[in-house]
Image 1: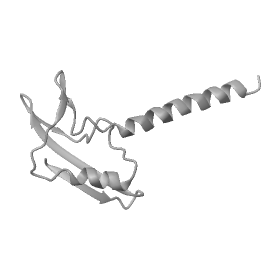
Image 2: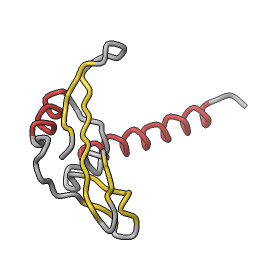
Image 3: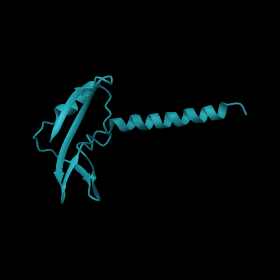
Image 4: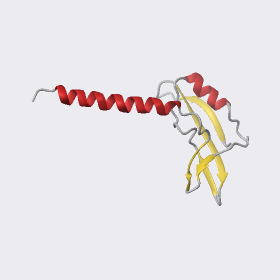
Length: 105
């Protein structure tokens, strides 16, 4: 683990975080993808708990695509953000369809 930090950006609302790690699969690869669901968390408490799991210098297990190791992440089990993305996508599609269907011809 190279870096695991939470910080406040003075130009944006809320806290943000950064994780960086490295692993070797024939070559050194540096990654920064926290989980399969990406970087979005429901709240700061979840974000803080995630960052606290990783300490710089700690050995971590990295999950990667054997065909393309540049596709990697630290946590492949936490998919909570994916559900939200799908709900937003479906909701947006339904809303757009409704608007098109209801508009006067």
